[in-house]
Image 1 (tube, helix red, strand yellow):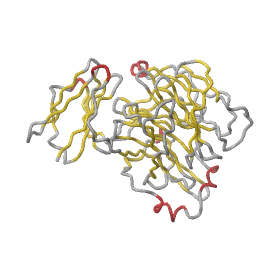
Image 2 (cartoon, rainbow, N blue to C red):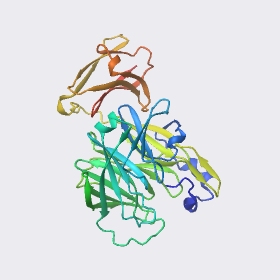
Image 3 (cartoon, helix red, strand yellow):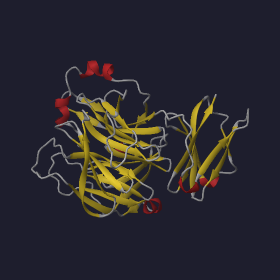
Amino acid sequence: MPRTLQMKTSLLYPCFFFCASLLCAQDGIRELGILPNEVEETSGLVFYNGRILTHNDSGNDPQLFEIDTLSLEVLRTVRISNAENVDWEDMAQDEAYFYIGDFGNFNGDRRDLAVYRVAKADYDSSDTVSADRIDFTYADQTDFSPTPRSNWDAEALVVLGSELVILTKQWQDLGSVAYALPKVPGSHIARNLGSYPVNGLLTGATYNPTTQVLFLIGYSELLLPFTLRFSEVTIDSFFVGDGERINLNIGFAQIEGITFSTEAQYFVSSERFVNDNPPITAASRLFSFSIAIDAEPVDETPEEGNQLLLYRRLGSGDLGYELQTERRIFGRAIFDALGRRITYTRADRISGNTVDISGLRAAIYYLTFYLDDEILSKPFVLD
């Protein structure tokens, strides 16, 4: 969306500043800091090889930015040479590709909606890459006359198996419709998977294939950010039940992106917001929250034989592990329960099969390994 959002002024009620603190529920979200100026219009997020990847939205350069989760510095910029950022709004990933949604459609009249597909192998090896293009139209859109605050806008994208799912941002109805299309280049007709009464404006989504949990993110008519959580999501049953709505206790923020780093840890970004009347300025920021994981015994053996086992001798300041994998290892990290990276070790500096944890205070942590197409993570507790 544009940097200055006069078009949203009608959503700001005079009582906003007095009631905002009363309408926010406690949910454990934590602000990690202000994002760099290069990504002040951050829109989509994914977590890859221990870093946040993001892009800016409409009218900016066709670039991806890698951000360190501790310093929040931009560590790398990758340009997509054959793409144009008409209105990039979200991104997602699978084992082999990144997907970038160029489907922002505020007026509802775009006929060039697309998703760009970038191979991870290319991304890993060069700072300039090319992308495949996945063009699409909505199966049930027949009217393309320009209408500001359209129901055909979209800002959310997830990968679900062999398909992409795009979720619309309905300015008029304050709901969302999910559309599916193949994640392969070509021209496609996106089919309707159903709708959901969001009661707000949907701006991002992430789907965790391990837990089958879908998180939607957006803001209400009072511009208060929220998440919606759906469990056991499938392509044939996308909106399951009523969804669990959680108001994010971060005050005023134009929330735009969400991604996960582990089964329990999530990152959320906000775009820089400027409003003329009333005069409001809010910096672009990064947040993190954690969710509870089912304590019942589960089969935690990753696909294709990858396995991580943890052990610790009583009184020892070292955490031992056994990592079984045939994949290439990029690095090893420890995260806390808020998703903050505490330590990071490059693959060429990993020796032995123990980690020094003597300097950590009592808390829940996650030992994490970055493989070439997978993140392997296990929790451990210090008390």
